[in-house]
Image (cartoon, rainbow, N blue to C red; front, side):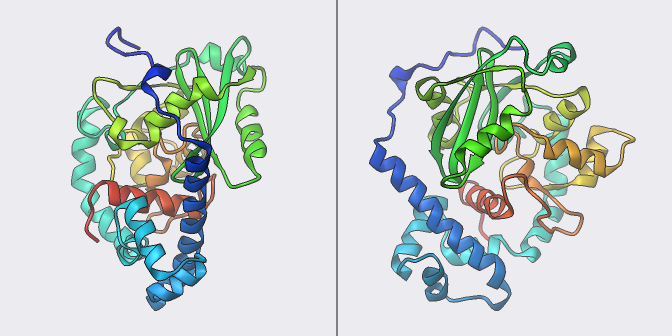
Length: 304
């Protein structure tokens, strides 16, 4: 349930990026995406900074400064954060942290990457209506992971998707199919405060929690709530997630619920790995999943 302590977002508190800065943010991610794609294919050979820079269409100095600015990591550290060996170590190290995080509940230190999320679930009856009677506002906003499709309701953030250049409308259509009977209104102004709140870590404040509304089946909501207990810089597996949900259903059913997560990044489905540390699938692409994990490693101050 939402509390009276929650503050409404105000455009007066938001300094929107100029179009040039928005374009720069998207260009940064495009360069990062190229570098990550190259690193993902070549990490076993430990490519040089020159090779990575060439793949990103940058000079070595430009790539170095871009990664430091974007993720707080050097390209070499970022590459190490994406290796399978690192994922396996992270899974081992995460076990005790996750035990404490899951036990603490959503109000404890295991909140989603300290974004201080407070949530409510839409009732089963509302969900079954397919969004009928709901008014959802959407906007397209630059993010560290490409263009973000931000969808809000009067109760809070309802959807978050990602798109590469030119794929914004298909990404929006993908989200609209989840609630086909809702009324959709484009509003950059009303969705911009949410975008800033999500992607600007200086805005992750306990006194201004991010309000989200989870729209799904009871089982899906339980899986998403459990995901929100996986802290920044930690990962889990589908089988461990199934055990935490206390379900008799197979990990495959949990995986299906993870795949239907309408709040990518905020509900951190990108932190779920395969049993042996492999990245497995991600609705918005494995390159973006790698980018999120690497970016979070920098936010967490991880040394890899």
